[in-house]
Image (cartoon, rainbow, N blue to C red; front, side, top):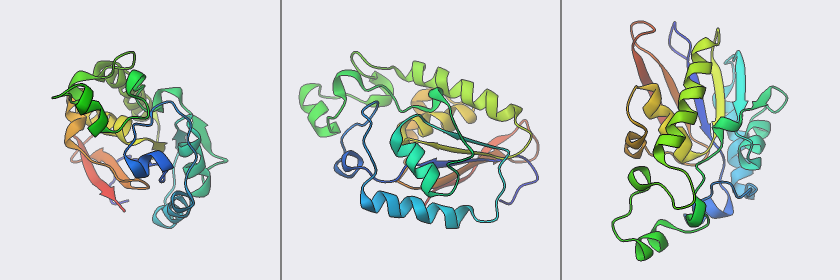
Length: 193
């Protein structure tokens, strides 16, 4: 990209039927829609000419398919820590449906009954941040929106709940990196389509 320091490029998976309708898709393994597949192919154009020392993907088929359609399937290493949040009892529900049952609920603050807390998602993100900082070069990551938002917060040293301040569209590209030296983590680009 544009830095002398290593960068971590984050790709949110392409559209699925559930992401298009706002349903929480944690561990349910939903395939990409035709539009999601086409958007994933276009990711390849945005990554053209870049080199990556490591390519990691969530175990979900939506992330692995996006990785493959973007041209990195053969290089992609599945990292279980990159899985989307476990939404527990709220899996498959929209935010509006959840708020009907639980007024005032906020996912990053309140987590999910029988699912994952923001602290647990943050602990998984910390594993990825530590691993990425050990790679001698750029890292390319394919995962899901809510987990990538937590990952960005943890990259910056913020609490996992601050992932609520970032938004990611499907098939978007974001870049984590550094400013003046390796002690200054920053977001270099966010939610580019």
